[in-house]
Image 1 (tube, rainbow, N blue to C red):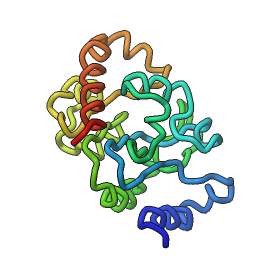
Image 2 (cartoon, rainbow, N blue to C red):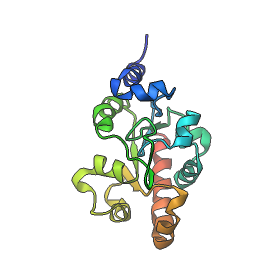
Image 3 (cartoon, rainbow, N blue to C red):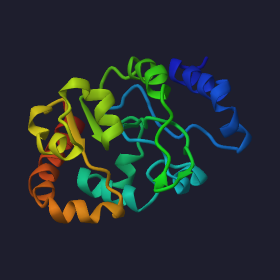
Length: 196
């Protein structure tokens, strides 16, 4: 007998809105198991990740795991991390980078998936799309202001800038991120993964 999470995945695959992805041979790129302690919400898989069938399988993922202070084995263990992007498929290339996540995907599927994750202790919000959706009116005017106010969202959530190598200018302008946010993130992650 399939679990509810398996049934939800099957519904996502069968959703007519995702027919184009099925035709391309893509699987929905997320991971979730009922034991997950941390929910990591990103924007949408990149092309490389989608083609490999493994989320965060690129330079951004390497940097993200470094910020989190976890190994690849921990990160890809769905009983530790639920990886839940705002769109489950690579949305394609736009004029200045990847297209944004399709509207409505998170609204439709995230609540159902999260309802099956009773052990989650921490939600990490990577990038503006995840922050706007999950923080709503609690988000600041800009992503930088939201990330800088990270203490306001602890202990349940941590907002992060996207770990893309293309964000090197942002990180150079905002040294407080590596000095303050990353250590706080690692502490929150370690607590979430530790004993209850």
